[in-house]
Image 1 (spheres, rainbow, N blue to C red):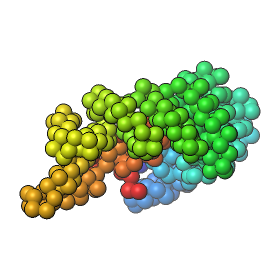
Image 2 (cartoon, rainbow, N blue to C red):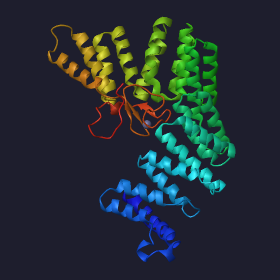
Image 3 (cartoon, rainbow, N blue to C red):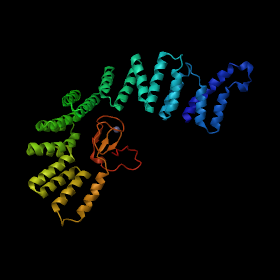
Image 4 (cartoon, protein in one colour):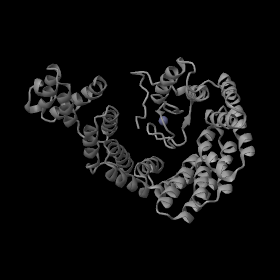
Length: 398
Ligand SMILES: [Zn+2]
């Protein structure tokens, strides 16, 4: 509030003094100031700064000397969340015929950002389109359009915006473009157009060869078609592409393995993922496999070995469940209590975290709901703890 008044007061005083000067011969010195200026001061003294700001803004005439001030004020209001005021200031600016081309374009950009902040995407889109056509503030306008189309889930237009931004020298949006193709593939899959879905996923991989999401979706598509060996190959490829996501493919791989019967190969894969990547999902699947093949204690030993190197709540819960199963009735009475407690803690905890904004989630989001970054949310065993109250971390309550 004070920064706005510091900006406004001297300018409003100068404007009032100037308009008073024009009638100087008829007025006494005390009336050199515009009465509205005193009204504003009065409101300020009566601790009504909001109303005072409105009066000072009305007093501030738009001319070539005050355009920058109007722009700064509008920006300030928007940043403070007072979008209505920002919109009024920028609309007032644009209505002035005296603005030069550059000033008008800058005002359009600011007004577009106000509309965006207010959630008026249609109006914002119209203004940014106008700037792109005029080739003024093109990069800023395209970045905003890119954001709007992502919110509207218009993935074709997102691809177009990304390409146009890249053609203007912006950094290559490889990861984002791959996700847009994945989104289009999901849409095609929902419409039962498997051929188009497959083509979109191949495009995703041609843009970003490390797109684990595209590979996983290709695996799902192959499974759907009953091509289990192909699906198995896709799912295991995630390990080389982006090992952090390897835990996400253990469940479908287990299903493939059960149907194909390639236990030995799968066991080696699990061992590698558990040892090298510290994947708790792989370790759990491996312990179950060992328990089936070599007996209860061997499975428990496998899990304990893993947990001593990679401690996690999820792994501990699984170990206790295995213990309970092995011990049966008449086992250690403390075990069910411990298992229940750990299970409760795990169910109310988070296993994924955004590397950009710290958003905590219980499932994998490919685009962070907090900061809207793609591929920034990753499995994080150390974010299993509950988000502390008042920590400021945004959490996914789905
Ligand atoms: Zn984020």
